[in-house]
Length: 336
View 1 (cartoon, rainbow, N blue to C red):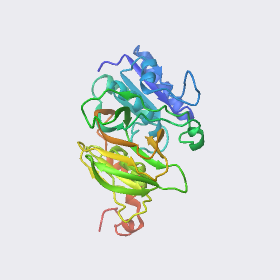
View 2: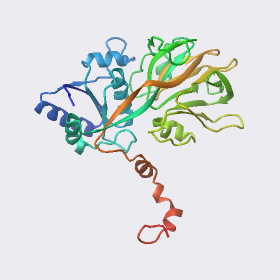
View 3: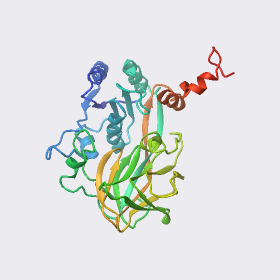
View 4: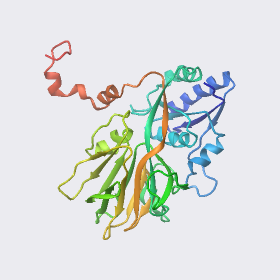
């Protein structure tokens, strides 16, 4: 597979990640492949606001492969850049076990060689996008108040032309959500009052701390922490889960990939923050709405071998180490 340029996203706060990046540079240098750092934190203007993904990928020279080195958060930043041109992304894990970064630093050279030779496994994942009643905005000073991230804020989403998918009643936002879109109350003393519509029909009205709308990939993130179900990342669909709802119905709902989940801020609600993959992207007022739908594009993950999602799930949550399960096995570790 042709690879003339690699975009590199590195968690600079981890010495192991910085060291692993040098492996990528050496491997690329031996083959005459250009490596460009994707500096998602650098801005030309306001130091508190990061650039749009299109600006980031343009400054990198439109790489053929994006390599992220860090944890799942670093991967999400790199995936946002890779999605602009639809190029694959290779996630290298330099921290705790994650669901997205499965390549270890010792496997970097082998993985890059497999990709170059066309022998790597390319795994496609569904992502989410959004449309809204109006362009999203972030009130001045809001980012510093909320501290939604460890670095500068992403700017509000740019608009994209209407593609014919979803509703034409609002504006389409240039957003790629790998994990989730979250609607969260801003005031501690006021709940978020949200009407949820499925395919344009009111399903339920929620009074809650937040509402999570997640992809199958994101089902193991905030959705899982809020009590939502784990979905296979290979499936297509959307799951939404209320957080601390003040109502009897507190269950998650899974809808088909061709269905749309719209969230409207009801009259009497306080303002609602909208975050995408953990990054604040706008604030909604009563009467505003946002629709979340499956994107027409997918993200493409580079794997050295077919992923074993359930093995990682078992490992991450210690599912085989539950005391009751251990007590019910013989000395060989097999069930009685």
